[in-house]
Length: 405
Image (cartoon, one colour):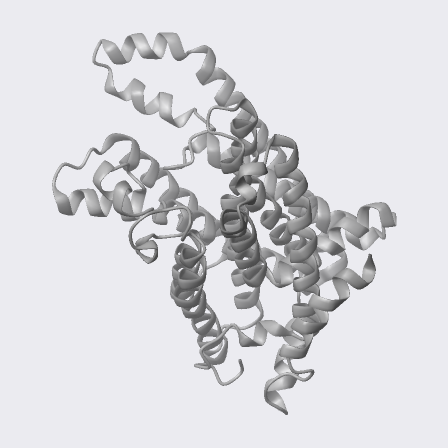
């Protein structure tokens, strides 16, 4: 069985040179950045890839199947976790350096994700949508844009980044829940920035809630700065920060559940008030729905971002204490996938969204076999990510605009 996996892995390995591009200071800087990586951040980012696969696998179960709804709600964790952790990684880098070289490297990486990521992800939708598949706006576009914009706020403190992220998210929620654009320019702005549903735009291309996701990214940058600053006093600050993230994340997720349950119990009264012309009640009803992703609601953000934050804090607290291998094994697997998050996401996208339709496997995927197929996909993703990580393949995710890339 092992030899069946060795062959494709070795083929991929041959395509990647053994030694990184460049010598001297560039190579040393690359190795230094790899040593500075935080396992907990990589593990959460890798876990997000699994939830991406869960979210996309639901398309093969059937829209009317109750199991598809369960997969959809579980998969909702992917987007906020990925945006939050991407911001954390970016803020962590800026906590180490805000130099011109660091800015150039981050913008270079963001442009690569924005351009090449768009082409690779959209191309995988060939069998899923009609018309021009490249006209869609996918989540890698939003992430690439966020990364490119991050240098503009690199000098802000952690507290200010988190505060402004929270404020931006609340504003986007108010606009998205109360604004009904009627003009073509308004519909375009509403769809591109807030993911306000416009039937004509939805028919021609997908959109993401750009501003709300940027708010998640800003909050993540603030957390990343806090994690980077822990090196000032490793023994005292790291456990305290881990505990804080765990507690705050758990409380946020719990509040999200409470608000959702409260909104569900009050729904009949809210519907009656809406029918009587109380528009603010409609906004309140939307805010309490944790299952609404497009556009995201406060309950949705509290629940899913809270889970991501709590898991990160738990891992940061657990890993330095050398827990049992039963716990560290899955964390290390997730970290390998997380260190190669871009190539891992592209692999999940192609193996889940494209491959079954291309080979006709989608006709045989049922609720049970779909999860089995997802398990096989994640094994392949792990093998590819492992080779990519060992050969330091991330150095290729660049246009070469940075002298240190």
